[in-house]
Length: 205
Image (spheres, rainbow, N blue to C red):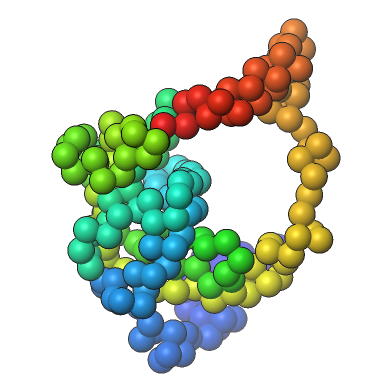
């Protein structure tokens, strides 16, 4: 099996990016790229530990939930979750992060790379309140790179084609996955209780 170990080998196969591609990478938002941040209700947050283990975590809220404080600074609220805090623990040791902003129905995405720090300033986070609840924590992201990413992946995947949507019942539930590791686990009760909590929006904010 042939493996690629040097960038020169990679470039022999891929070639170099065009001048247009290189030119689209900026170090700050402008009036056009900011629109992707303002309209996105869904963001993927990538972090890594000093040892190199990586994590990608979804973040979702009403569109515009990631606040643009200025052209070089974003504020991403941290909502209640499973308390594993993988992303936060990584950031404490390695502040480099990547963000991918997704707008429903739109194939182009916005990529932001930068450095994050965890903030717990109630006055700052007040602007991120939803349903009357202010998040206890947030990520302040200093932008280092920002650029749009083309639609090819979304078009290949037919991601926004409703005829390609998969019914949730066709995949194992969270309870069933737990039971696969512990045969005594009550998957049905777990799934029913979680569905009830979600219907009440319990723990959302």
